[in-house]
Image (cartoon, rainbow, N blue to C red; front, side, top):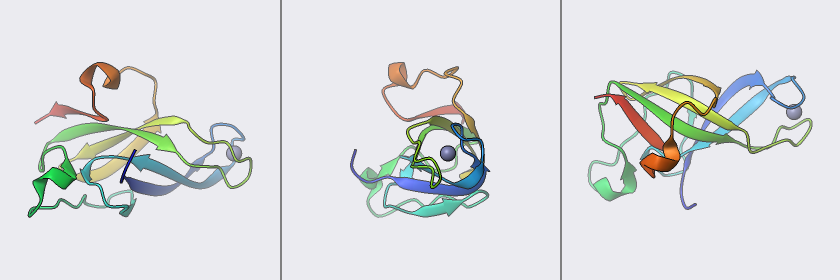
Length: 113
Ligand SMILES: [Zn+2]
């Protein structure tokens, strides 16, 4: 999978239901193991555009993300959506499969440029 970034927030584990420090892995903007929180601004590499996924400054992008282990029940691998507005990590939700990342052949979809 190579380099990715993570989003850290408090949210209920989808398996045990307990609120945990949830960690979501995603690939968007500069992929360099950055650790973000909700409402953080994404970082882009302006000198090496090839280390970026996507284009800076899009109005609304949805990212496909995957959860790391729950510290209580060790459940992992849930699919999530991360909503990005103007390069800010704004909200998450469990992935209900309404976006087709497979057909798009990438882990993000630009909903509004
Ligand atoms: Zn759990």
